[in-house]
Length: 307
Ligand code: 13P
Ligand code: SF4
Image 1: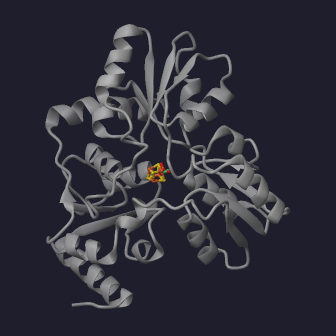
Image 2: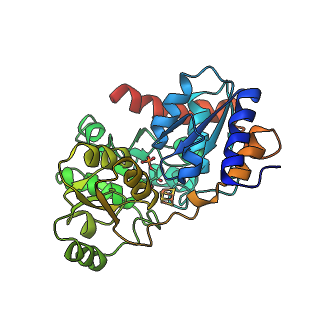
């Protein structure tokens, strides 16, 4: 049995080849997981990547909704989630019946959902968006319809700020990691690093995003940092992004906006979990019935059509 990080990584690389697995690691995964992955990126980018690969087995290192989205886009593949307990409180905060009840009272509403949500909730939605495509897709939706934007009210508030004349309804909640960052700690981080650029995810609250030099998705933040001439950045998203950027750009300083920007669910995947899954001894296969997948695909297909 392996007993060091390096030995685990070697065993995973060998087993995934033997068993015909592709490993997908969300950007918020730890570096030791990212190193054994075939692809790393944000959730929707990974799902699209999986569509074009030859491997029949796909292992998602991330949270449940990400593995479900891979399955929805590649139903013919066997998709496993490495850490079955890894959920996302933001993605899972509503149930489909709440949307259906709202629709019954507001028959003209268009339900727009962040692709980062459950398969079941997607079944009740009209169109998905990613944090990168939200503003663009909103522009293409009819202006005379009310929009119910779920499940992240802070991403919704970011969209609302860009379209102040539209009727956009937001509900409670948000990402407990990003939304926990306060304006006060953001002001303090800027005061501590006055020449650093502040890059934040739109899942942060509006009084935090208002202070940012750049608001964007995880991949947007990484691209901005890669292309900027600045040498210091405060990173307002999950702390692993600071680690990844620090490895890639050793001459640049990256500071976490807060030490609390740690997603416990993203930290649940371990190298032993990955090894067990690729050996057929662990992980959980994502099983969705045909009818559910068909219904949930409608809002994803609409996003692809509009995007
Ligand atoms: P994306 O992968 O869609 O950027 O988002 C992941 C996430 O969990 C943001 O908090
Ligand atoms: Fe969910 Fe927030 Fe963790 Fe992303 S960072 S997986 S939105 S809890």
